[in-house]
Image (cartoon, rainbow, N blue to C red; front, side, top):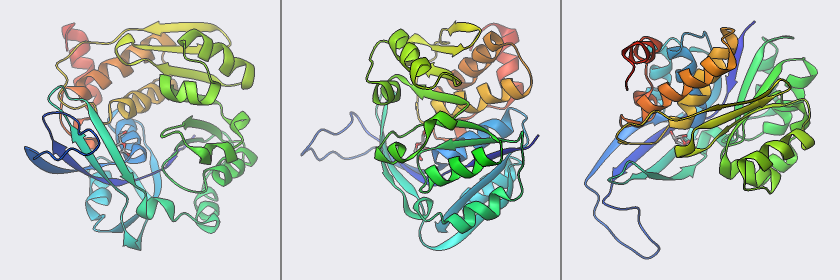
Length: 298
Ligand code: RIB
């Protein structure tokens, strides 16, 4: 069984600010750093750091070489990453003194997927392989349809939620990983339990992980509901915490861990990511997560 992540790669320009800007405000930032990120890339790196061999498929633009490099450094298979002319996907991220962020996304090369490229990539995968997707690339609906035809297991992190998801047949998804906001956008419900009930009604075959910020996470499948709290840390930068959770939880499924252990592993990994700056740079190795586990602290 192979694991393919078809997703975005972004250069993250991260500005440290006193407080997230309000409309009309001008504020001098304290620093600027450039990190490798993108929900797709972060999730591939999280899978790789968790010990899962992963192929990343995606497009980088001009100046995107560090994104390719970080994949190679972390053992992500780069056979399906292409460089194209034009601007690379990138973001402008503000991080405040409490580690909270806001992200302005420019799709760039991530929005240049073609059906031909999708077909070329999927030709190398088959029934039983896993495909992981987020919503930062174009042609998402086409990728879902082709992967489903091939009987791949489709995992979707519907983030960021926008109209493009309306053109996707979400009944083909095996596992959703979403936060409360995305849960509301998909179901119209605000209460976590109601979101889960509605997801079950809309997509009866799908398993779902709902992350709840400070309230932890909850998982639902045909066997029941499992809940997990958070591990408290001093927040430095929340960027990629959700991606770390996603990669680590998927790794636990592939490794055959019990659900509750998988949720705990993912919660612990994402807590470590929150305690560090940057996106891919903040994602811990599995050995670090396990060490913290045996120490009984983060
Ligand atoms: O989830 C965090 C990621 O979202 C950042 O790395 C940024 O690139 C945006 O895609």
